[in-house]
View 1 (cartoon, rainbow, N blue to C red):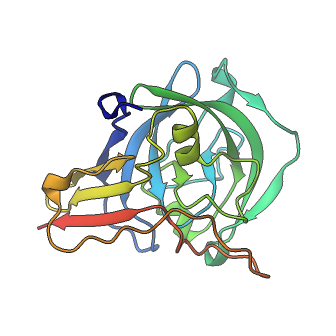
View 2: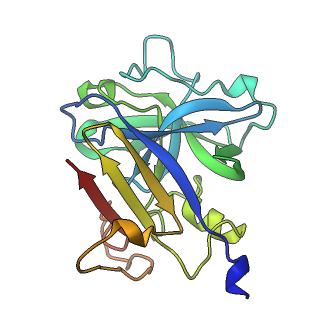
Length: 227
């Protein structure tokens, strides 16, 4: 393929919410789900293997969190449940989230993807209540332990030609002082790098006889923080 026609990847604007004492990143991007689009604060999460969203399946007094957004599945014409069974999903020391599996359209900038995701129907606890964001895309989802009911969004971007498979990179450029930053999917701005570079090859996780949320095989994640 001619390099002049290679996809350039996607760049998402990142925002920093207030510090929370729950171990989760305060950084999020505004991403939309559904038709018409419903904007939500979404984490690009290196610590989970699922794509999920807080939803109106939650009772009004449940799924309470700092960001406070919910995906209203009944208002989306492109939404569908993929089964009608509610199941638990463990977040380890945080507790358990009750989820239902569904499908809808995810909009990243102007790029639309038909994905599967898990809708939160219930969660509670101090860690969840402090979340600066409403939903999450699990970046290290290329794993034997990926929940088959949610999409590996990065793979979907490559499958649909939005990301060059020869550029399977994820790069973060975050400025703590301004609370603004960027996440590049499928591209790296080399003008913002200096010194030695570490590129981790993309490979699926090795199967081991235990459940894991390790993400040592993450495609590529380079964190750059400016003072």
